[in-house]
Amino acid sequence: MNDVEQMVIPTHGEKSVSSIVPAIITQQANALVSENVLDADCIVLLIVDGLGYEQLEKHRSELPFLGPASATAITTVAPSTTASALTSISTGVPPGEHGVVGYKIPTSQGLLNCLRWSVGSKLMMNDLPPIDFQPVEPFLGTHPSVITRAEFQSTGFTQAHLRNGNFCGWWSPATLVTEITHQVRLGVSFVYAYYDGLDKVGHVHGLEDHYLDELKFVDALVERIVQELPDGAVLLVTADHGMVAVGDNVLNLDEELIRGTSSTSGEARFLWLHAKERSTQALMDMAQIYADVAWIVSIDQMLDEQWFGPYVSSEARRRLGDVAVVAREAIAVIDPRLPDSPHLIARHGSVTAAEMLVPFLRF
Image (cartoon, rainbow, N blue to C red; front, side, top):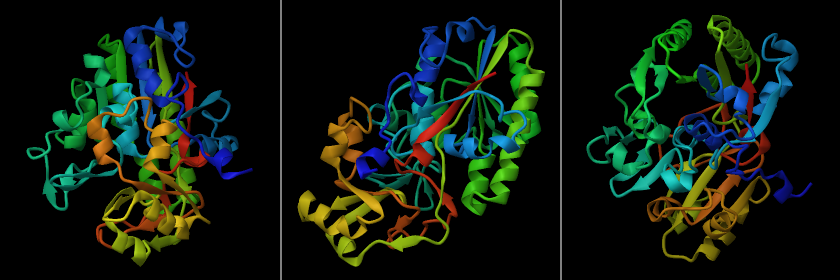
């Protein structure tokens, strides 16, 4: 199998994460959201952060509820990272259109951490207003119930990708179920819910025992939701990305590349190099030092192959780099100029099947 065959480039079609919410809101059936689903009194969409299709398949025999269920493999976005994928799920458009093109994005104010909405230690709500940074209206301008962690309510990223929603915060996973069932019984027709425990455990502990135990908890959580839903309601489950166990396979960015770049952005498995003075081709040549473990891809190739969707706004284009080191093997590449890079055991962001394929399930 050659490198091209190993890549999973986002489809941006009906079998992608961005196709779910528009089908629900417009009541237009597609390959994932059937007419029967649209006929439901209420549709609950649960996003399980970090639940990759390959990870689910690997552990099916140990999951009494999810194991027997039929799951369709669909693609997330590139990069396969939470900020980009959750925004594509809620807006229904690829990153090239909504502009949240990665975890860390270069701006005139510095490198924006999209999840924290900060540059360094400074919160950027006023300097980089989320509604301007990400102008596509979530949920097509409608107002579904949005059930996520209570502490996320006032964050910049929540404003960027969940504004318009009727925010219902949960303080524990048990009350996630409570909030969902409460909204359904109020007669809400669409409920968006989010659970992040699996992703956190993967980052901290990797994909072994701790991950499996958390996955078993997710299994029980989904079963609880299904049990509590009244007749006439349907539950859809999907995810923003899968994960790869990297462990200590962390490489510091090569010194020549540091000298040849003004900065880097993105994340450790999809690291953008921003050329300083040399041409993109010169940067491509220097980055070949990672060719044994990563795909070295130019921005032109990505745009030609529509990695970020068929349309890339001028603002989104300015946020992208010149050359990307896109991890193929279980490695991470860190820029030592960015001292706040966390040490994570499992990661995501690249275009491997383990990261790009996520399940879609209906109950």
